[in-house]
Structures are given as C-alpha cells and as structure tokens.
Amino acid sequence: MEYKYLSSIPRPLLNDFVNNRVIPFVGAGFSKNADIPAGFSMPDWNEIGKLVAAEITGYDYDNNAIDALSYYEDLYSRTKLVEFLMKELHFGKIQPGSTYKAFCELFTGIICTTNFDSLLEDEMILLHRPVSVIVTKDRLTVGNEDESKIIKLHGDFNHPDKMVITENDYDMYIQRNPIFATYIANLFITNTMLLIGYSFDDNDFRGIWQIISAC
Image (cartoon, rainbow, N blue to C red; front, side, top):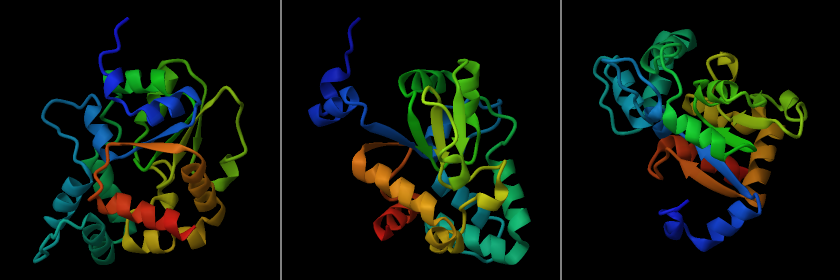
C-alpha cells in the first residue's frame, strides 16, 4: 500500500505516532464532515457566532462568537441558548460520515473534543469498539484499558449543565473543574496534541489555551 501523504508529515510527529504520543483534539470544523440532511449546512464556531448575532436586535458582530453567545444568554436565558445551539447544530439529525469512520479507525486511544455532538462516540459504536465518554472528573478513572476515551472538555447536549459556551463559562472553568482542567493540562504537557477542525484565530481555541496556560 502506498501512503502518498506520509512524506508531508513532519518527522517528529511521525515519531510521536509510532510512540503512541499523539492525541487528536477535535474542534467544530471537523463536524462539517458529518452526513448532513439535504438543505442543511454545518456551521463552524465563527458561523455560529454570526447566526446568534443575527438573533439579537442592534448587535454588531465583530467575529467574537463567545461574546455573541454570552449576550444572547444574558438576554434570553441559558435554556434558550442551549436550544438555539441544538437547532443550529442539527442535534439528532446528523450522522457520522466516512471521514468519521476513517478517523475512528486511526485513533483508538484518547480523543479530546470541544464539540457538543455525539458523532465520535456514535461512530465508535458503529465500529463495535468499546468507548467511554468523559464529561466530568468522576469518569476519568472509570473504564477499561481497551476502551477509547472521548474527553469532552466543553460538555455536550446530554450534559447541558457542563457545557462551556459563554465568557463566564470560560472564566469559571478552572474553579468549577479543577481536577478536569489539570488532567487536560497534563495531556498537553506529556503528549503532542494534533489539532483538527480549529483555527488559531478561533476564540474557542484561544479560550482553551488560556485555561491550559492557567494550569
């Protein structure tokens, strides 16, 4: 079999792959690879910001999705914000596509994500692979060695009380999740994080980096 892209991967990253020291870190951009019903599109983090800004009369969007989401919550409530995200991210209507299958066949250890959907664990189940979904510190020590571990730093729609969406959520993250934040920081220190579906300009990513730096 010819691996035509192998030569384009930096050698230090290849070495980390061989030594099982690469942890994928999956962001909103990766969800665009889902199977999406006709007539729908999957927004990335900045597009979510634009969509929520359009719901706020007189609000000028300045490419800061977290600010727009925070303002929406202040105006209409946390419940309405979560409902808005469920609608715009097509919760319950999208399915993992072929890219998810390839990804889950390649990565079978720890996977980190800030996405609220369940596409990664859905694909693991379709592949008949044992998987543990970790949203709280209580789940960190639960599971078997042969399980894939999907760590959801920002919670998900099945745990709306753990979702990290607004500026206050980011500001209070370490205080509310000290053990969880320390665990994630340790992963960053001891492994190579492979960012997938992120831009370095994402406010979401910058918020994560501030949390890691603070630890």
